[in-house]
Each structure stands twice: as C-alpha cells, then as structure tokens.
Image 1 (cartoon, rainbow, N blue to C red):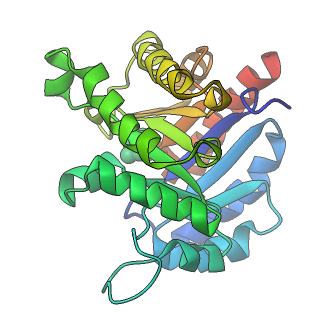
Image 2: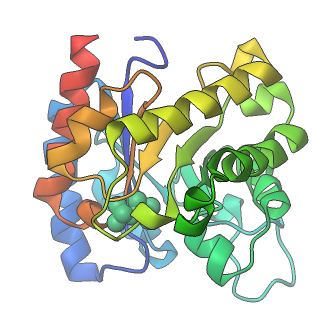
Length: 258
Ligand code: PEP
C-alpha cells in the first residue's frame, strides 16, 4: 500500500474523558477499527489515560498518542511530560502545535518545530498542526500564515526527519464550531502545503496532510476524496465511537476506491 493511498483518521480527545467512558470508547474502537484495514487509525488521549489506552488498544488496529509533549527530554520542567514518557506507554503519535496550544500557551512556530524534533528523536510521529484564524483568512493571509508555520518545521528538521512527520491543516475558525472548510477550500490549502513540501525536497512529497476542523460522518468522504487530503484530525466527533468509526468508514471507502 503506498504511503498516500492509506488514509489517516486520528482522534484528538482534548481534555475530555474519564476512566469509565474511555473504557467503552476504546473498546468500541478496538473492535470496530478491525474493519478498516486501509486506514491508519489513532487516538490522542489526555496523558493520564495513556496506560488505559495501551491496555485496551494493544494488539488492535488503533494507535494511540498524546496531544502535546515537552520540548525538553527530561529535568526540572514541572508539569511537563516528555516524549520518552509517552513512549513508555506505547504511544506512537504526538500532536504538536495545536492551535489551542499556540493560542492559550503562546507556543511559537519555532517551539513547535523543537517539539516535532523531540517527538521524532523519541520515536514518535509528530502531527504538526497549522492553521489560520478567521481574521487572517478574511484578510487574505491564509497562505502567509500556514506557510510560515510550516517553514519553521522545514527549517529545523533534516530531510530524513521531515519524511517521518504528518502535517494537519486545521483552520482555527473551523475547530469545534461545526463549520467545516468546504472540501474545495481545504484542498486549496493542502495543495499549497504540498507544493511547499515539494519545494523543500521531492523526497517529502508524500508527507501525509490531514484536514481538521468539524469533520463529521457527513462531510468526511468529500474531504478525504480531495487529491491532497490524506485523512483527518478529528476533535468532537472522536468522542463518539459511532461517529468516529463512520469517519473511518468514509476514509476506507476513499482509500479502497484509489
Ligand atoms: C481539533 O481540535 O483538532 C479538531 C479538529 O476539533 P473539531 O473536530 O471538534 O473541530
């Protein structure tokens, strides 16, 4: 299976979930995920629940990971969690640079690039998020904003590292609002990001580009059917097993039609 034929569907639970409800959700994903062999499925859970994810997803077709990592390998960084700690619990994925981290924790694109590199050094696949606000879109600055966010990562990482990242385009105005970008709007930005990768090196042309922002069962197939959209990063809908699995089914339908 070529790297880009298989779609990705990764859940971002954010700060949601408790032991009992997680158990039902993870069990549903572990059994339901089996049907989607052409899809890379993953869930990024709150860090305290990594052990629970490991115990319930081990051996299933669903990977798990974290929503952020420290830029440091270890030491006096109270409250932070290192990439290696996540790896201790079987994590393989780490979201870095989510817009909520950029907005509420003042994370710069340079810091996000450091975190992406830390993730790779620990053996995690970083999912690097980029995206513009509504004001930025309306002022015509979308490409400048997402281009600069991506450039920080392109500047820091070596080519062999870049070949192992995932990028998620998540327009801030579409996150948690119910208002998704249209498939054409998302494709336009993805094509721009793909061209930016290729301009850096043809060797990273296949970096998976995920779309995130109010992906639902109803719009997933149209989004995933776009030439440069390799799957989705799913927030709200990843908390409901039926919705999340329906999005996986949409990804499978598009993957197997290719
Ligand atoms: C997200 O925050 O990563 C996200 C895509 O959220 P939602 O699907 O709820 O818009």
